[in-house]
Image 1 (cartoon, helix red, strand yellow):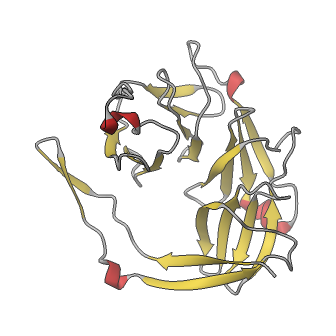
Image 2: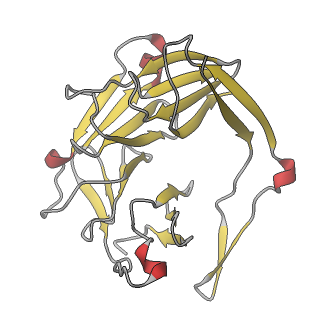
Length: 244
């Protein structure tokens, strides 16, 4: 019997920051001693679902967690009840509409009505209806084909991850020199950010900033992104105002 433990953290992280002299950034957040945690063990064999590499986790409500697992089993996304069982699983492997070859992670919309997965191989962004997925219907809500998104100029659309923003927008994070970050909707690229430091493998603090080990998040007001890296321990806060 195979089990895996998920740690559920009830915490509040404030993205508010203060800049001094354009360099120093101070964060205000709750102390670790105030974080309430619990461990949830899931009997995965019972549900014929094997968890081995969960990379994204979102809380839907007080009793439901949405987990993305790219272990190449039969399903990608799983609704987990806090009592310790799988409610529903969805997200198929394959080449048909709404299926995946090389999925890069899950994001949940602010209203928690849709979740999206980007496929690095096909360059499709697939959005699922949370309600339909829980109800057992067809969860595929929309499929955005990046080659059909108007960019105004030739540009690479291959990302490491895509996050759902408000107002039906998406943010793609990659390391291609012409599209480090793109904000787009179903039909048009709205902004492209490429004026970040040029990679130099000879410089340790540059080598890892835009490598595929980087991860990122968006502030609640969607005006900044934070980028962290596994190599070099780089940590950057970048503004998403205008085209700079």
